[in-house]
Image (cartoon, rainbow, N blue to C red; front, side, top):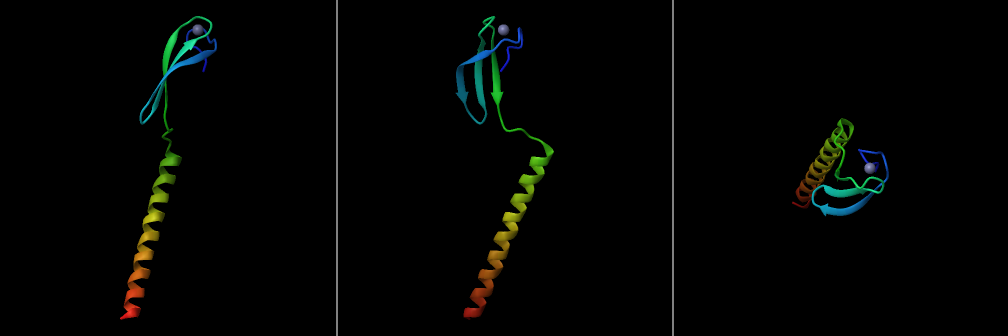
Length: 76
Ligand SMILES: [Zn+2]
């Protein structure tokens, strides 16, 4: 990542790992230190995609439940 002060190259000097990853960087040219955060991008497309996946998964579970119930009914 480029230094926000002089656009020089920076180096990671520390990392804190949590739900998101926080890194501390130091510019190799001017020595300026700054934190950065690494996290999952939240954009609409992926939100919709995640919702659809969840819905499909639930529908699949319901289908399996219906199938099992039918199976049980057949046994009786
Ligand atoms: Zn710099």
